[in-house]
Amino acid sequence: MVTDHYNKLIIITGSSGAGRTTAINVFEDIGYESIDNIPISMIENLVLAKNRNKNLALGVDIRTREFSPKSLRKLVSKFDKIEIKVIFLDCDLNKLLGRFNETRRIHPLSGSKSLSEALVEEMEYLNPIKEFSDFVIDTTDYSPTDLRQELLNYMSISEIEKFSILLQSFSYKKGLPRNIDIIFDCRFLKNPYWNTELRDLDGNSQLIQDFVSNSSEFNSFFSKVLSLLNFYIPQVQKEGKNQFSVGFGCTGGKHRSVVLVNKIMQKLKKDGYNILLKHRDIIS
Image (tube, rainbow, N blue to C red):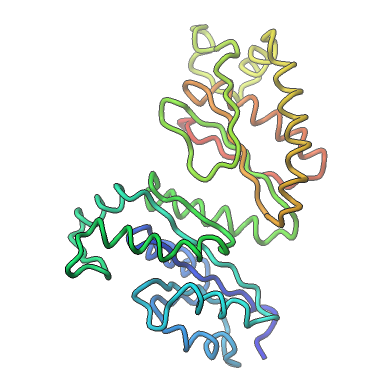
């Protein structure tokens, strides 16, 4: 019988080129026994091995022997004393094409098909797995470092046995963040950027907080956002999700959105929620 201390199994799958190797290395770095492309039929014996002294992170995809959405779902349902998480790495088709062309790798489904056709076929085949995965990460705009941080954030939240909320500020000029459930636009609030004495500060500064909070629209906006979240969050919890991600955007991502994130965090923490904070575009 596997000891309770080593009862975790992470299964990493998804589109070829979406970052599975990077993800496997992350889990190896934090102490998991990490194995890529192990045949499905061997996984049960590996998981139940009596001499196992580490948690497991396994990479599987269409190259894996006996791999299919049906076989993977059947495997996941086998264990009642093992904590299993399926992490699915997704990515935009054009980005995958670029990655394959840069590395000159051959797609597993290539042959008579073009690379684009092979990728589309793989995406369609994997869709059922995405539906039952515990965590889907869109890696389109992620560097290996970004993916590593996203996985570490996810694991830190998973260790806590209660629902958690990720609050993130961002700059619209640098694009919408991936993997966000709901976004609020803060660009209508008075902008500290146009005050030369405040421009170089960020939303963690009390001066910026006071400036933004004193905007005529701030109190109404803040209360409506908080009211919506207080309604919305319990509905998300009912669905069994363990994380809910909320984004706040402004033009530069360092003033108004940061203030909103910080103030919402304070309110939600008072309500007992576990909060993870990320200011994406503050340059340290």
